[in-house]
Length: 232
Image 1 (spheres, rainbow, N blue to C red):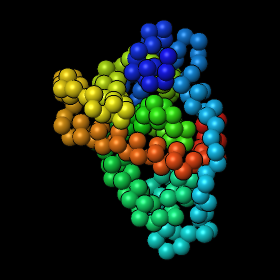
Image 2 (tube, one colour):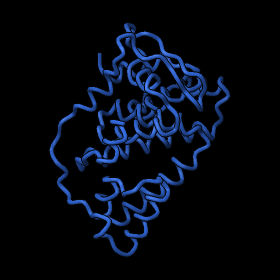
Image 3 (cartoon, rainbow, N blue to C red):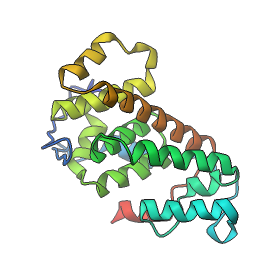
Image 4 (cartoon, helix red, strand yellow):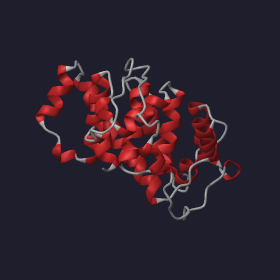
């Protein structure tokens, strides 16, 4: 059984999980207490990043300004590794930062749902860097370990159904775009999800794939601050 099958709820051997609300989700972990999807991703091995980081003390001009904006927006002590790599191309860094700011931070969807969606896409695409980043983000916005295990190992068991539907639709948009059917959209609308929210889900799925490609193609190492946060 693959990670994507688990995410879409095709693994009938898992124990159902539950969430309390779409903005403060909680759930039950698999019966054996493991989070197999995360453990598989965490153990991924790959070559080192082929591009040098542009550290903060090396940044000048527009890049230095963007760095300061990133730290302020994310409320982190240092610039993430992905930005230190993108800084080799100021337009790429600027565009990525703007996209994250406008789409991720400005979305009308609840932050926990966005974080779970991006985390699930990273699991499905086996992106260790983004999976680590989004897992920590999930924790920071109130998603507990039980829900993370449920999202990663048996999404079909997650409640409320609205959260399950949003994340499932987003994964399908990211992984099997041409397989989306009218029924997929009707299911969202039946739950009161608006056209603007549907567009945002699709755009966020695209953002997740884009970040996965950047991180995996450039073999970006997980930041020490992210590792420390996950270990806490």
